[in-house]
Image (tube, rainbow, N blue to C red; front, side):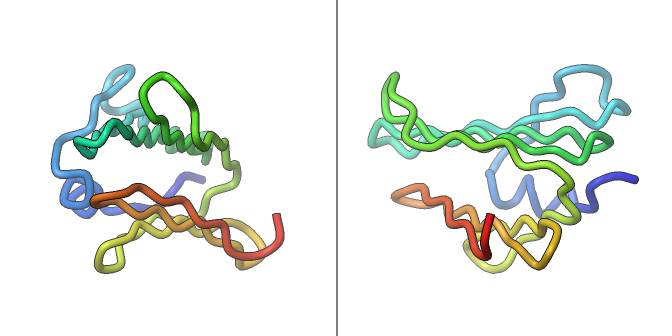
Amino acid sequence: MFIRYDLLELIDFFGKEPTYLYEEEAGVFMFSVENGEGFSLLFHVDTYAKKIHVEVTYGTSIVFSGVFADVITIRRSERVLIVDLPDEKKLIIQKGETFGVVIEGTM
């Protein structure tokens, strides 16, 4: 199995092409964006391992870091990215003037 996602939605959300960490076919890539206020958002996807790593930093300080396994889908909904996890849990990633990561459901 693998994570279902639309690469064009991810490119549109992050505003740039992903960086592939191996060959493109390996399905391991990441996006990294900054907001101009010192915050950075890293979104790392391992398609076939069904894992993502999300990290928000301010300068050299980590504000949030999480690895999520058994990811089902990644989809865009207006200004947010929604990561569907098992048992109806969701990870919501907000990008804009500020970055936000919201975990819905009991982890």
